[in-house]
Length: 304
Image 1 (cartoon, rainbow, N blue to C red):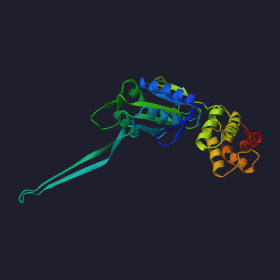
Image 2 (image 1 turned 45 degrees about the horizontal axis):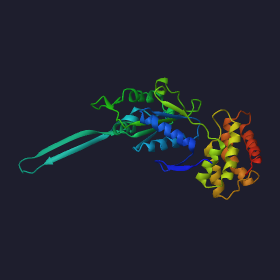
Image 3 (image 1 turned 90 degrees about the vertical axis):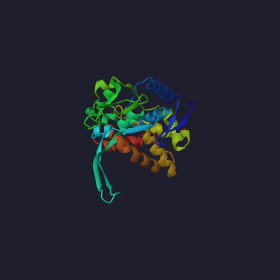
Image 4 (image 1 turned 90 degrees about the horizontal axis):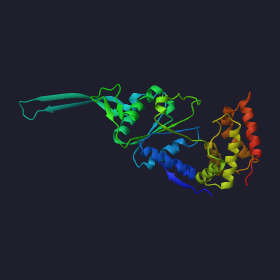
């Protein structure tokens, strides 16, 4: 039987690790130590962000998290002048001498990328393909020349040298996902890309059992149900481990039997899985078809 263990990451969420996950983290840590950035990619709900944060924690350096989005720009990454600071000095120490000195200076605030680069943090750039490729171009200089150009700033230095302890971990969803930009080959060529797929049923059941504290057989029944519905969906889509965790948690909290013939459990599954399944199947009536698939899958449930 697979031996499981917990690791609490920086944002206090838990990741349950099995032998395959441990092997992945160990390999990725070696690549980071050798100076190569890591890119974890795969369908939504496969635990890429949790893996990235767990990997970052193993470096035992401060972790900086950035979420990709289409509005992210160089000012967000590098920093910007945020306002002005004024200082006034009045010297009237001697009655006959009056001195007044006023000065106004601009206030600068480092962006998250600049802060991480300067101080040798581990940067986790979550869903980086949701940012525009022109924004992500700044990483080419970081990864190739070891410098961060200070584009568009009024700072006296044209660039900042990358701290030797700096490392970056990227995560992304496949290109066909909504709101995702295609990444430039020049950036991908500099990354070690590891594909993260949905876990097999046994591993998913172990995770659900461990995180929700329910019987392994009950957890296996839920993950098998979700996996069967995932088969009905288009490639790399459909309900994920998150859906299994939601069903298990709500069933446990409301004392709902994990039984496909139980009306409350069936209603719970339709509420949680209905929309997810309807979005990933090809049908003229996706909502009704999804509900029928869920009812059928629940009817086939077995708690061994």
